[in-house]
Amino acid sequence: MQPNPNPRAYQAIDPKDKTRRDSLELRLKDGRRYWLKHTDRHLMALSPDQTALTLSFYSMSVVIRGRNLAEVATAIDGRNTPHLCEYDAGKWDMPTDAKEPVIESMALYQPKADEDEGQGANKEQAESRARH
Image 1: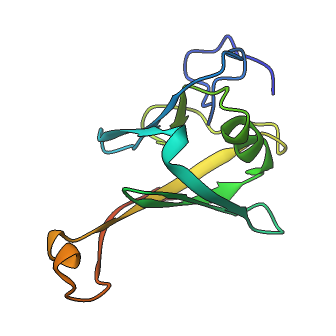
Image 2: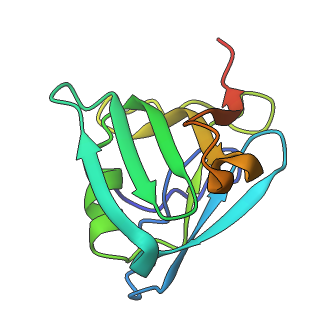
């Protein structure tokens, strides 16, 4: 993935930043942002067709849906991307290269406060979906 000089070009990750990071910023298209520590990540799973990526952190789980997510997984695993950015058609042009990764949605699952009191495994879902 090469840096794109077009300011309206979407990029799921920052391809030119190869600095090893301690945290990862999730940028949702609705404006919410989350910062997660890589040291809190204990599981990452990529679907065989590269359209789903699941990250499990101690504080939450993140389900990423899109296309060509293997490059995103590699950047996360190497801790060399500062952020993951959800695609927003109102802000950016869709990449014309079919090989470019695109994050169409990120769903965040956090335990409810009462889970610590042993009241079940209910999950609160904060979901943001890209509309086509």
